[in-house]
Length: 206
Image (cartoon, rainbow, N blue to C red; front, side, top):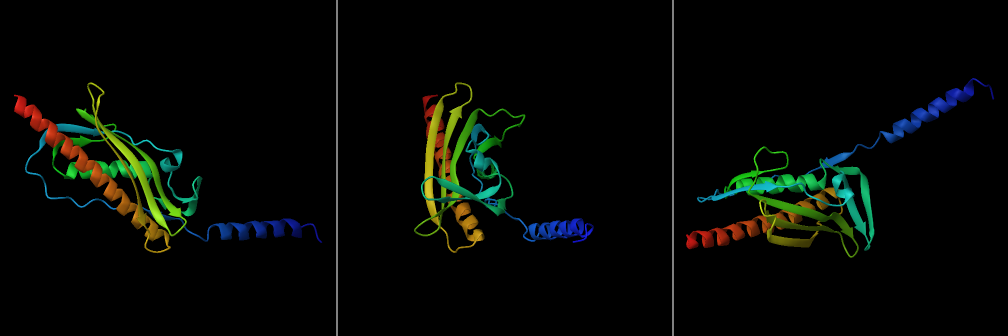
């Protein structure tokens, strides 16, 4: 073989490999913004700070995860979240608390407003689960703390599977979003009930 043809063949092979690598685009997904409920006619004299959400490193990145068996977790390389699940969870919770109209203010990390109460959370599961059918799994816990004393005033753990209607990744995303909505609704309702009961007791003592 002529020597000059070798680098030409190598170049052509490299170009063909590059072409194959760029043939499949990455698809990005996100959760839905909650629909604003009817605003409350009464507002608690309370300011809330939603702290950063903790969780495994896999949920601080954007690939969509799936679970096979008890201990194995993988990720889809061409299907990603628009932002890490811990960030989506935090943003959605802030929007749900704020849109309820029940609190004087609801802010996130980095805000100049200091909340009287802090909502802390941790995400344990946010993935597709394979085996005996496809489902979504969301597990998380939250606590409400008095910022001044550091005392935990209320806590809630949520873990639920949501059946996936179909085999496409878009169906998995929809199931995860519905599951997350259900869990965060329990969180916001629980926080509301805590203040409803305890602020009423404080007023009664005066």
